[in-house]
Length: 232
Image (cartoon, rainbow, N blue to C red; front, top):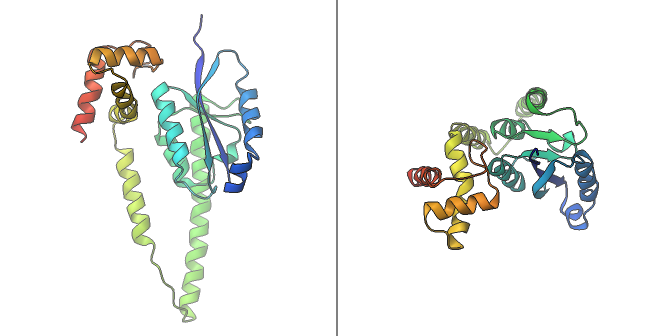
């Protein structure tokens, strides 16, 4: 019998008022449920973000991507426009190593889905470039009129770009070890101390190995621990 495919659901509302009232969330849940109607689909985790669509620092999304990598699951969202308003955000999705699905575009998945994300990122980058050009032109005109302008964001943007570059250079094996670190700490707190006990606990939780296997071994746990020690 074929195993159920794993999914992590990600929902987003734009304002705290909407988040508190649940407005929009139920419609998104219904859309995702309709997309996952196949009996082989299994949702292993759900995350809800209350954020502005113009921002890319979304902690709930980071948690959803981590959960998707840990469980080797696909990230599923209700609508394409919930994820496509930021160049940096789309780039982060492409670098996350996670299969992304859209409930309103059920035919887009796998390599086709990644290609579509790349095109969305290219369009968003073009739009950002056009906006930047218009902004620079407006600032130049303001300076020509003698208007004083404060607040140079160049250093901030440079720091953000460098941080993004460093994140992209983290090897996938180290990233997976980092993703598993909180879970290993939780298992140790629950009494699993040896690599064998941790391997048994990971297997019991249904956490797949890096190769997608369902059973963990003590040497695999040892390698994860070694990566975590080496990164400190």
